Length: 325
Ligand code: ADP
Image (cartoon, rainbow, N blue to C red; front, side, top):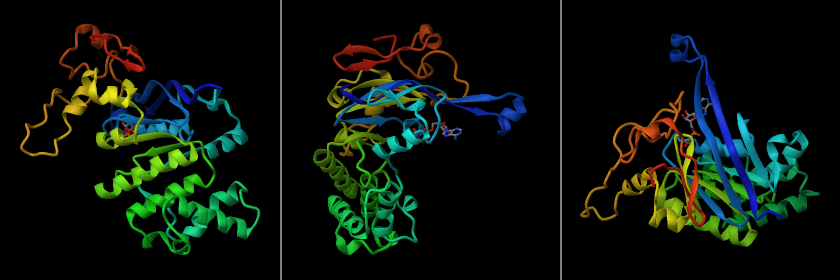
């Protein structure tokens, strides 16, 4: 059995833009390279944090893994099998094992259904409860798992706080006994104090249920708190990946360094962030060859603008895509 539950290999999603104003004026189809050949692997029972600024391709990556969006190229191995080749029935079965939890629990919970109805639905769809009594027992068990109780079962989503609604969304993901949960910014809509509680819940559940996580966030403190390993994305590429301590204490890629430097210190008296990158984030639309960071990078050479660097292992389990290290 492979130590990896999920592996992405040279995964790509290119959106063809042919009907927007710029493309029409230019009279040609432009290509938006949202995810442009990424490789990563997630070991059973660990949390891979996927971090990067808005628009770098994190959500698209989550959607590619679950085939909510069909990849343009590459492979997604789940337990060693390429799920991009699965036929409908097998994919449906696999979707049970890979659940998504989204940022906004309010829009993902039907306001006209009670929590009982919301949590019963996946049990019905996947025929996981033989009768009403079993269904109710399972729903109460799920509520308990996420720190809610029987008294919540017959209420509606609007009667809950943001943190509680996210607990309900997590319970719904757990209903089908998944092995992998992909959290797409699952705490970023919550107050900071509530964020910590929900992150702790994710950790407790991971221990209790032997879950594997891919956790997407733009907030570095969230990533640091929850991850075992981290992959840093920039404009459709993974630029650095390694253990959480290596990424935070010994970052090597200029982009990772800048990202960490830009985190404001909790103490306002300390010196302001050292923003080492100047200029704008490169566009993912018809990007030039070479490293996506080269227009902003303090150590870039001509070579960087011509040749895309590959991820290279610089120390054990620590991979960096940079020509100049
Ligand atoms: P992130 O989650 O890191 O904020 P996304 O994966 O949502 O980034 O988006 C990556 C890039 O892909 C962005 O430039 C976004 O505008 C673009 N994009 C996402 N979905 C589509 C789509 N359906 N059609 C065209 N472009 C898209």
